[in-house]
Structure formats: C-alpha cells, structure tokens
Image (cartoon, rainbow, N blue to C red; front, side, top):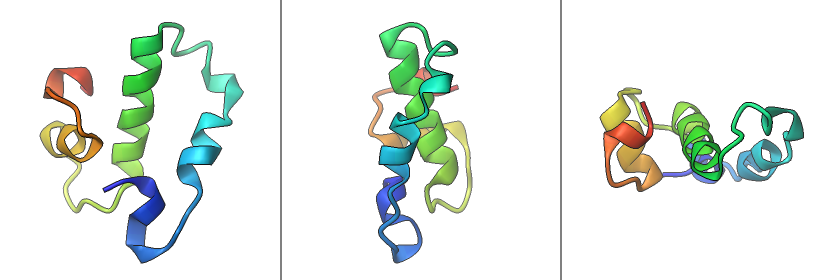
Length: 68
C-alpha cells in the first residue's frame, strides 16, 4: 500500500515528498534516498502497526535491513 491510497483518498504525498529538495542533502547517496523515501512512505501509509518488517513489505523491499 502506498501513500497515494492511504485511507481510500487519493493523496499526492509521493509527489510532495519527492519535491522536498531540502531533504536531498540528508540522503546523499541514491540508495539512501530510495530507502529514506520508502521509510517515510511506510510511516504515512495505512498499515496499522509500523514495524520495520511491515513497512519494508508495504514498500516492496526485499529485506527489512533496507528500511531500519
């Protein structure tokens, strides 16, 4: 489940999060930027429990190590 389908409404969170250029210096490597965005997406998605495993699964990542 992505942020765009959160709570059944079409939110533009993915577009807005990618537009936050001020976060770019924090995620200076491409892989860090991808997993950082996946982490934020997991925090904002509609899953009930925000565990690393569930957030990684919701983001479609292979391993929980990528998100925690």
